[in-house]
Length: 352
Image (cartoon, rainbow, N blue to C red; front, side, top):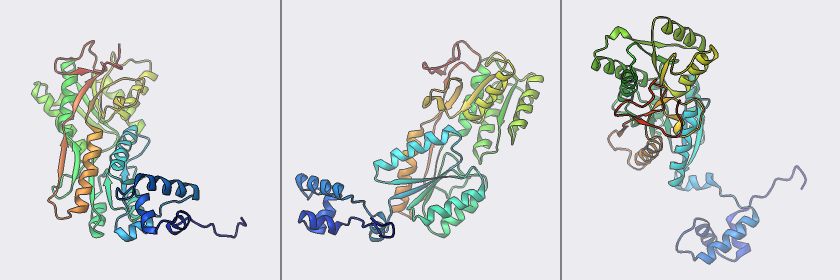
């Protein structure tokens, strides 16, 4: 075929002419409608495959007013958490006949806003948003264009938004209590960035566990370090002043701390006990086991998709909120040979 010649796309009319069926019958067969016999559906599909037919979703969306596509705006895919979560979203969306478009905001508001505009240009039916600290601007834009949205994993502490989250405060409480029950009384909470609302909640849980155990508040130190160098200096300082246990905001950050300490010839948990958050090792066999806070990621993904779908079909529903309860999985990075009473060990991987 000459390069200048425009390729011909196979249409429903082409298939109808080849098979002898009407365009309507061809269309219904390709959609697996039950009023078309199985034999006819199979015949039409075979001819469609042979002719290279590809469904025109743009035309379908013009007729229905829906693209059956959802925009997902995550933080950054360098964190395995987002890969695990978006995989769960993909599965949940596919079960309901939706496709997803994935964008990364890197927790930067301008990048997030550009991602929203791109998603809107593709005529997505709705958006699942992992919000950053300044996402009110994003939400104002979504409301202005009347696109449904659901906040996932984080929220802005506003009752008017639909959101699906885990109980971050309880997770912070469980992580800190686990370190305390393992014998640590001078503790640090470390985060490399201030995550909207989640950081605040986990810090509250951190101090609640200290208070419950009768440990002075000054024995619980918190730090938000914006870079790896700052985080390493903070860890060094805490070790010098006697901190023996750290609750780290997420597993990704916890492994960075572990890698840094091990590079200095130190050992986990002998020289520092560590608990993370997200239980990435429940999905990926990473060879540096840590105790971590787990919650139902698959359930959260399904709830987010179902909540968005409900909002699409019933725009006047009152705000919807789903909060998942976390639990702690012990892999002995807390510094005990056996998990404290009330906690459970992951039998697949842990420090020995």
